[in-house]
Image 1 (cartoon, rainbow, N blue to C red):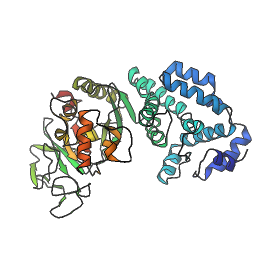
Image 2 (cartoon, rainbow, N blue to C red):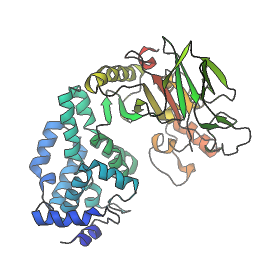
Image 3 (cartoon, helix red, strand yellow):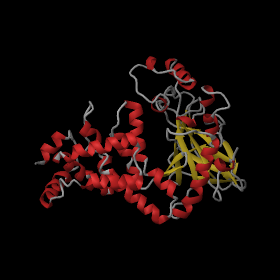
Image 4 (cartoon, rainbow, N blue to C red):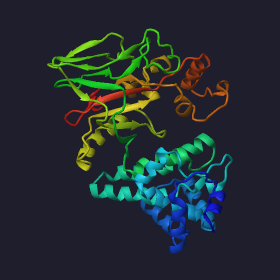
Length: 414
């Protein structure tokens, strides 16, 4: 066995320079083709303990592992990837350089469909073991470890087959870093605030204003450069200014757009609550389950209860969501009462730079080559298709709910 043959058989065209060195080292000490990560005994123990995979995906994992046990090249790749992913600094460096060693193939190949799963399993479980020590609620741990299963499930819906692709392999790196939490209905990600905004709150309350901070504002209130907002005529620079007396800036309105008139907010009444790089919880919305307000409120309440206790070094400033579901255009495609409108109701909305493409992944689920072929199975799909064919973008947006004294508008609101 040699390195070039392995990369050819696994269709790996890019890899870090250290890979051939590791290959020879591990070949020399006998660990290169170890079957441990795909052994029947190990995987059955994992499934019995953690209940990671549903019936369909568990059958896929078992069948894939059996095939990999027969392929020394696939085992070598998995063990190299396991060593690589464990080195978080190296992994992130190679990721930035876009030299990640993924199989590159265009038609389904059972062996290649599964090799990215097995290096993930022990590393994600190691994080969950640490969370047990931190006394993270057991349900949160058991739901979070199922993130691998959720990724396989989404690919099944989208592509009619179970496989682990590059997109979800990259996403699951957040689980290895301990950055994502499944809490009841919603998923939360630890990360710094990165929107081009400053968030003010009125002292002693949760009343919130979002001001542009470096965003270029198109004349229609969206971000200059967004689809359909390329013309700079009438645009303004969304400059935020702080003086001894207060804050000057361009606020958002109820429709999630920036106003084009600068406003003043006195420091006697207002304070900065969130700025760029402040720690936040970023909300993701898994496909499974109802979006009823009480289910979402339970998620917000629970996460704000245990995160300060289990992760005391993290001082969360806000709960934030960036999504097509935060679009200020939502009332143009759905009518009240609506879970979608209710979901964004207690966030303060703001625009993001957007090409309006998220709906093609999250509303329609499956890719199509021609927008005329988009389905119309629901009223939402029909409305989105009509907009798309008319050339009207549906922008992704942002929403923020500031955390004060252990609570926020998402918990306290209607």
